[in-house]
Figure 1: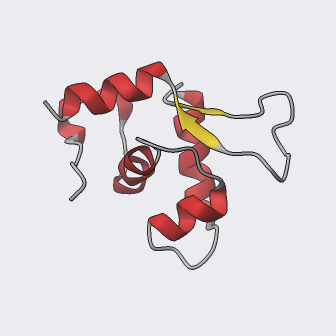
Figure 2: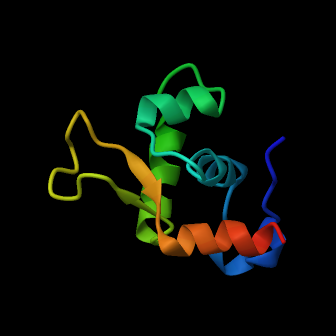
Amino acid sequence: MRPELRPELRPELNLTKLAIELLCCLRNDVAGKAALAEKVGHKSISGELKKQLKYLLNKDLIELTIPAKPTSKSQKYRLTVAGKDLLKHENE
């Protein structure tokens, strides 16, 4: 069972359900777009998934594992310290 974030506690972040699911998926692991899509139940990498990943990157909640090569086929995502703190505080 995966703990859920309560977006109403952080209204300034304006997190969608998909963004919350992505953060939860990255809690204990790094993952690429295809793996994240599968984990959240999408058949493929959707435009909305890409949009939410970009939003989370811009809010510094996640980061690229290969920042020097953002379009690398080996690119994956991981939580930042801020992302880990958000999950930790929201689930207390």
